[in-house]
Length: 62
Image (cartoon, rainbow, N blue to C red; front, side, top):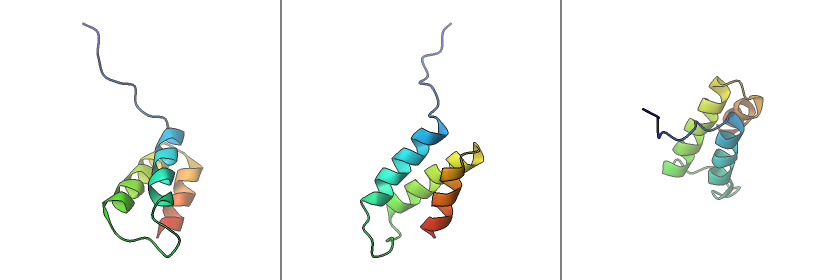
């Protein structure tokens, strides 16, 4: 039986999605809201998959 599961996102796709979430938060510091938390989770996933941009953006988020 064939799986109907969608392919897992690449690390770069995770970073791109997280960047879109954090880019809409503005420059005055990040509000600790659901979008910020979701972006951090995506950066962490990308970092764990070896993406250095994800690691850098994760560090800069705090």
